[in-house]
Image (cartoon, rainbow, N blue to C red; front, side, top):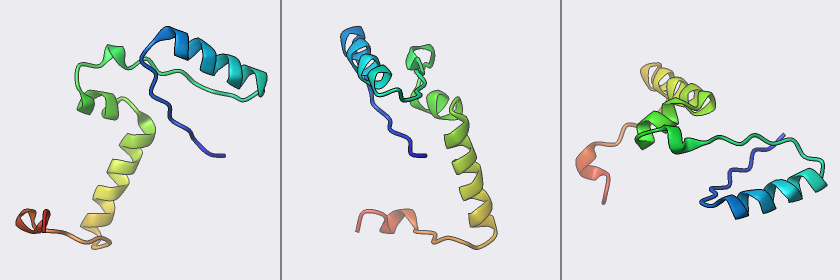
Length: 75
């Protein structure tokens, strides 16, 4: 299974996209991000993203990663 994320700004586009997905008999979810006040809140409200962030932190603690000093980040 693959995941496709489409950012929709208006209801007309949403209706068109959902009509296409329905016609193709594809399953989909609609997440309404308007309930979130900022980007961090939106990310932490998504269980998939939260799981990936948690796994990344565990990997770094276990030494499975590359740490880049902040001063080298834009070189």
